[in-house]
Amino acid sequence: MDAKIKHSEPSLGLTSAVFAALLVLLVVTVLVAQVELGSWNFVVAAGVATLKAVLILLVFMRVYYGTPLIWLVSGAGFVWLAILFNFVFCDYMTRGDAHSPTRDLGVSYEVRSRSTSD
Amino acid sequence: MSQSLSPAVDPTPFESSVGSRSHESVVAHHFVDAEQQHATAELGMWMFLVTEIMFFGAFFLAYLIYREWYPAAFAQGSHHMDVMLGTLNTAVLLTSSFTMALAVHAAEHSQRRQLVGLLSATFVLGAVFLGIKGLEYYHKYAEQLIPFAGWTFGPTGNERVGMMAFFNLYFLMTGMHAFHMVLGLAMLAILIVLANSDRIPSSRSILVHNVGLYWHFVDLVWVYLFPFFYLVAIRPAGHL
Image (cartoon, rainbow over all chains, first blue to last red; front, side, top):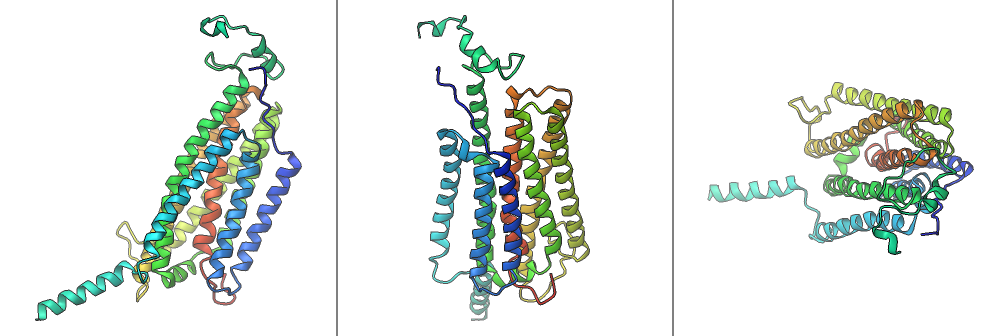
């Protein structure tokens, strides 16, 4: 009870530095999108976005300065999201070839028309 | 220990922790002290944000699956996005997060005038974001790229269905994001009124901090929306 919880905070200098970093990363992500990297374009875009998200979470949202409980709860949110993504993609990525619904429709129409013409 | 059932709790620890921060009693009776009340409110806000992570997470999941299904249509759809306006809007939103972070700092240090100014700046930047977003929506309407509400959807050819998926997701996700922005603006307006009449002492800065958490989270969602819709594929040269 006597141990007073001191909620610490990022300095104004660090907050400003993070803001500058976010703007730099914004320029980086726009510029990299003009360079042909194939499928790596998406990886870079998602990576830069995640870097920005981590900066916002740790400094602007002060998770870095939060109590262990805040670390746990905020972390759990993203762990649960990872579970959702993991299981859904385990399904969709292992279906042989990536079917689009319209391609599926095309196949079934074909089958139906063949069966009616018989 | 033994006094835990007694209503007359020794007020000394309470005063020692709050006294230096505020002249008025703002600790509800079921909290030990202002610090615990602060931590509890912050935890509650984070619990809400976890549900928001899952809410927007499901949209992003749907986006990734449809992008996997229709890569060419997503590239084509992305070419209809205005990267200049999108970049500008991202910068506006990041700046509003910065002023929001500064506002929390001002609230904690009892800088009332700075608090009102920074909250107002955040509000104005948020409104500018929505204004630019509305302009972009209007452009999409004019270019016949709204695939619902009975409007004509312009694109034809092989990628038409995929582009409809792209623009449905675009309006769904940015629309839900904009809706969150509108709620954020309403909360900011309330904070501005409260701060202006000096009703946010530093001991209640958690009010500003929690609205700030919400605001930063909405910013965080946009950080992903921007590259996912505006920067899907390389553009034809000189065609930003």
